[in-house]
Length: 273
Image (cartoon, rainbow, N blue to C red; front, side):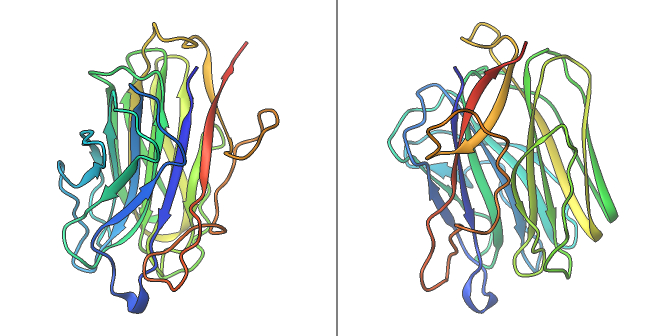
């Protein structure tokens, strides 16, 4: 069965000075052989740039590669990075290190079991716009069982840009304050057939930028047939619940006097009829 954890870090540095690097840890050990997908929104006054290699690392020497980078839009960018067939370790810690020391970041990492360990990425796409919507097209997928992930980054003079997302996708994380740091929306969807894939966000009118990527599941993995993902709080001991929409309650911030406990969410399997 597939599963995992979603680990959120958000950054509100004191005096608006930005941050150099940031780290966050999973609550438990990822399963050996899993994939880890990192979603990032980044803003820097001189333009955010995160190198393709060496900028996302962890304390178990897993290798993270840049899967998708969005166009620069009002000095903000969205990114997706991934590591495959990872080594297991308790409370695995991931570090994100953009270029420069004055970056504002919103980011999270999700562990996904059952991904192909090689040739994992199928299609990618990116786009930017100065409008009240942003659509990112990823092209046409080639295999029936895939996980799609899309990320939006926005630098708009608004503390609530009121993201809306495609209702067929599950929201991993949203930060509507595009003024204090950088707006971010990360969403995911399990694909059960091949076809064209895209995602559209709605938000306050302004500059936004986004990326999309799909990751192929191993068709021979246990529980691969008809798999969809359900998100629930990690301390939920009951049955499967509705998707969890994460908000600013429980986040922690770099540069604050008393960082809060990060939010963690667990992924669970549900076999579709």
